[in-house]
Image (cartoon, rainbow, N blue to C red; front, side, top):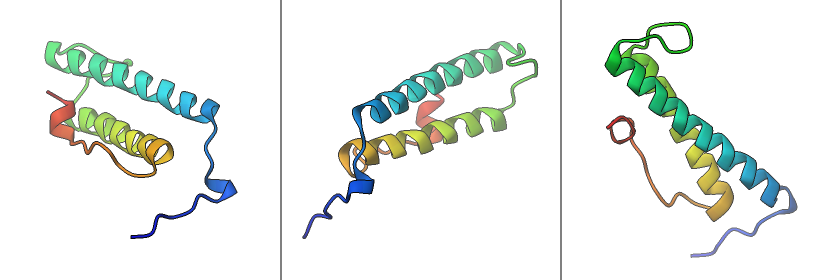
Length: 87
């Protein structure tokens, strides 16, 4: 199977990867804070958190994580699910 050659527009800089990684860390802490707020029935970002909100946060994290993996490795290395993130 032939590998796809990277075109100049496909090249990702270290700064871009670092920015993506920092955003993933921020989203991970946001999911954790929202999960704690949901379990304790306390407001998060000035509103009550529903399970649908938690799923939306998790889906956003998964989407960004997949983009990071594609940029760094060229393919997905780790597949994720909402259920595993919300454990």
